[in-house]
Image (cartoon, rainbow, N blue to C red):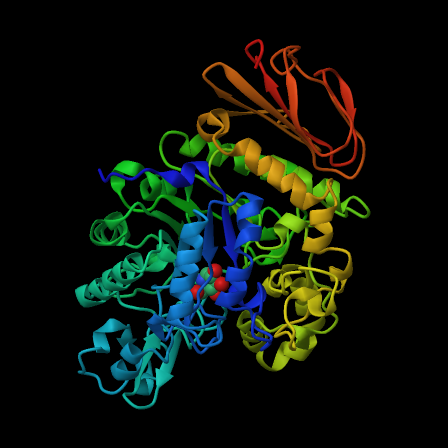
Length: 565
Ligand code: NOJ
């Protein structure tokens, strides 16, 4: 066992999507100096660490998730010196830094790939998956796997007349982890950044790195094919364990894996401390309660969300570790997704979601703008989307795209990743204080009211509530270690749960609906010796008794408090 302090168990991690966070040089793209200028803001919020989406050199087909040089910074974000300043400034403020580690694939402009395509027998050929095609003249892809972004997962290359594998866009060729040289390269990259002072990694689509030998055809699937041959593939645990031993464990790190397709059983293996693989994973089950397979809209039902919460809270208890998130750069904003139409109750709804999520066990993540209740952008035309995923989806429809366009657009409006990628809203000045130049992407017009400056001033704002909630949670043993027990499981409107630890209990009551809902404590939850510690309305509810909850009302009570505490 390594000597990890496991600091992430008592922490809040703030995710920055650098392009959209803060621009310091007026080129319309957020950058490292911009981040440095906002460190005090993040510190003041109460976060203990920052997860930075990729800032490495990249041709940006997928906004940095296609890396062409793992040891350098993209010029649009700054220089290595800027990065070193960032690390130093974060150290001063006792903030830890988690970098994105995108090593399932590289960019097609990475020097390994450029060399690998040159011939069939060069030393980099086996860094990637090159295969002959099927059919007459080998003009059919080597197998039926599909890209996560639509279409075949293979692209033909004229030069050597072979195909290469890419589980994402064709500009993102997959690395062959079965090649020990590739694994050594990744270790070196990890250690390079650890030596520069980073404290951990968020491992992009890490569950895909081990592919089944022979790359067999996948079974038929409506939205994708091949998953069973590369999700938690045969050597995944061996490779992660190796990377942990030779890289991650060289420092007191936190490693979170993006767990595409992760099941509870697998998550236990990944995050069980004895296995020395990852520290926590992002699973997607709660993100699928309103989108089937994360793609097709379906009616959100609170009951399904609560089932997912209970399953993961109980399933990982003392066996692994959870991550708590409602937002990131790959999903639309949470307001409206899980709350229905919040109308004039945006503030109450945002606070309620924070209580419902962050009183659970696990490492809490906050995505930039979530703490001020940023909302989806209102796209008015399909051509406004910038995301490569949108272009890919459209091209999958081929000549039929114009016919399906209205439907595609209808779905994208609520599902597109671009919804969460609009620039951060700092103040009511032009371009929301994000840039003095022309922003790379649309700014949500609601920035004149929803912005950091306003939130700082208003003592009842979402931002100030987040600060309070974070302070309440940090160091709170019941919330860090306590057991999770759900009540009112069948209730369609309320999320009610208790956390228990060493005789102290914390009761959480959340109304997910924009209407009044009755709540009647049962003999376990009715406790006279209680104290209201967090509340999203400005009046007291000193006693746990039958009550009518207001729209989105959320309460946190401490029960069985020893006298005089
Ligand atoms: C997951 C990342 O979060 C997403 O933004 C990216 O497009 C894919 N992985 C591919 O790297």
